[in-house]
Amino acid sequence: MALLEVKNLSVAIRQKQGLITVVDNLSFHVDENETLGIVGESGCGKSLTALSIMGLLQGSQVRITEGTVCFDGVDLLILGPAERRAIMGDQMAMIFQEPMTSLNPVYRVGDQIVEVLLQHLKLSRAAAKQRTLELLDLVRIPNPILQINSYPHQMSGGQRQRIMIAMALACSPRILIADEPTTALDVTVQKEVLDLMGELQRHTGTAIVLISHDLGVIAQTCDRVAVMYRGKIVETAATKALFADIRHPYTKGLLNSLPLVDGDVEWLDTIPGQVPGIETVLPGCAFQPRCAFADERCSYEKPNDIRVAGGHWARCHYAGQST
Amino acid sequence: MLSYTLKRLLTLLPTLIAASILVFLFVHLIPGDPAAVLLGDTATPQEIAALTREMGLDKPLWQQYTLWLSEVAKGNLGQSIFFKAPVTSIIADGAQTSILLATMTIFWIIIFGIPIGVLSATRQGSWVDQLTSGLAMFFASVPTFWLGLYLILIFAVGLGWFPSSGFPSIFDEGGISNLRYLLLPSLTLAAPNAALIIRLVRASMLDISREDHVRTARAKGLHPTKVAIKHVFRNALITVVAAFGFTFAALVSEAVVTETVFSLPGIGRLVVQSILRRDYPVIQGVILVIVVLYLFINLLVDLAYAMLDPRVSLK
Image (cartoon, rainbow over all chains, first blue to last red; front, side):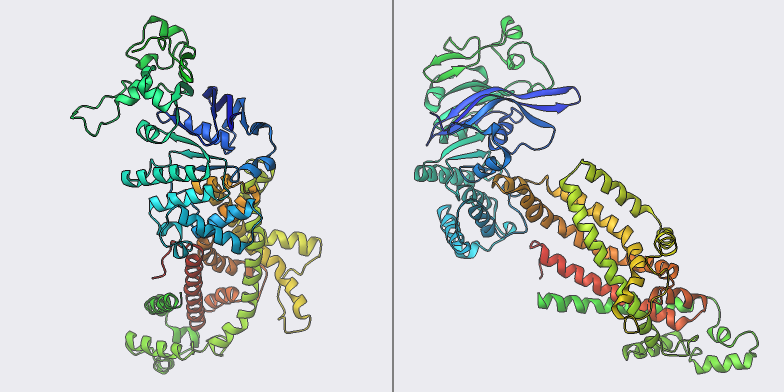
């Protein structure tokens, strides 16, 4: 049984025109000890998916309309608020995109880690502080004894993201959801943080869901990849299998728009056009207006998932033909 | 912290000197000759000239100012023309009433303003929120004298629960129970300010609760009440404390009206009466005392602000 199993998850936003589905019938799973990458352009619903799994959707404007999110065999969506909170921060933790604003500015970083430890583990304050020092050391904050008393504004972005990682890992979660954890960081710091996450995973066996718009980051770190476009997964496979044999034109577009370090290219490929607004209803394939391979059929018939190989699926009429 | 406080105290000096010049000049800007006012209609020009010389008013303005300032520095604010007594002792007489009134008022502002603000922010859109927001809007808009008169009409005249005016000293007969005289005035004074604090607490809490770090707090699995108090309110408090400086300024001006409506022997009413009596030394003295108080309150606000927000540097 998978550690996390998302089935037919739909999330809708209430707008003037009515409910608009932004995450559409999404299904995927994450096994223990595995890193799943979810990749897509901004607005494709990947962050909303993460917040739905974590239980952090807020406000009357957004709500889950359908589906189940099973964690260790229990559907999180039918749990009461208190039962849900017992899991949040303990067995499931999350890292956010903006390390600059994700820490409370008025508390010392050490106290913010201690807070989550005391919330879930039966520890004395002294023991929690000791554990915090270990965590700071684990995420390679230099001089933990000094830095435990720092305020967030006294730290760099990379350091703050390390604090966020320490906080997320504090109670040894079984799954870690990382929503664009490196997007706001410098490229050099990006690599350090990604390496750190990978190393900690080998250490602790935590499953990771890594959400990113950057296919390069995903390729580097993930065991499996799910490519999202307009609220749907359009292609999913093991990372190696996917890059060996891309079947969906959108995935291909994403890959081609990556700058190659060793290539002598002056022109970067882009995917033409823009993602249609969420209120636009397309009768056929969601990617059809921007797809170079689209034909008549794509404009009126929605494609189904087509099995390419074991564990490799693509949502395209022509996924069966190798390109 | 200590060196910062001392430095701030030093920077108060130029402000105080500037304020003293303004207060001094202010009296000289008022048309009319103090000696003539003092002696009344029947005075002869010789008498007026003699008194002018006696009061030192024939000297150049800068000499008058330095003379006055050196007396002020010694704690002598001059003689009241009307009471024929030192201004300092007249202000001291009114201070008891005003200090007690201010203390009770600030107590009400905190007791009502903060919990109701927090409640309406955490229950945004509920009937509790709509009711308190409506009431806050009402009390923030009502003039102080109107509210004071209606409270007298209902609770003093109609129900007879509280006295309608005056305030015997708490050191006289009745002791502490004399504070009941200040109940209606302090509530009158607190109402518009508590209403502002309610609105401010609510607005800044709603602002803060949209920030990323609050989502982090929720992701820790904390109880919503803990998130609201420890994370949201704690950050909103910074804004609220900053606003307390303005609240004090509002209190001073509203106290003048309230003390008059309730006939309280405080400093506010003293100012109004002294203006009517053209008792210049008293007006000067009271304004100077209020300026000094205001500067110190703002210093306290700044220090509290620095203590609440670690991002504010104390260097």
